[in-house]
Amino acid sequence: MNDNEIRWRQIFDNYDKAFIELNHVKDRIFENNLEKAGYIHYFEIAFNLANRVMFAYLEAKERFTEDYHLAVKELAGEGIIRDSHTWYKVENRKKLPLFLHKNEMLFDELIYDITETYIPEFTYFWERLKEIR
Image (cartoon, rainbow, N blue to C red; front, side, top):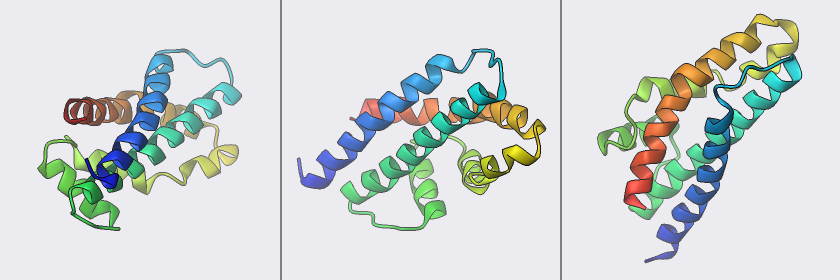
């Protein structure tokens, strides 16, 4: 096993921990905006780690890219990502939490999207990579 193979697996281990914790609290009812913000922040951590896993995995397979859309497309082609449009949506909306203080409805919208759309896709990603690992 080469260094790049070891590296993507190490990054995946970090993603694994963050994903499991996020998945553990996804059905919780959040009492206030601070709890909601914490959930959203933990999602951002899991998303950032998922991105690192994507690029490290591709690098380990000697398919180098710095383009997010191309990385998603490559992994979708391998069956590691099920719905590339969901991943594009997450990427496009990643700065949205910066505006939470201006619009309280964004909290609930983001919580819904994370729980109902993003986590199921992250679960698929996690399961496929667990099998490969």
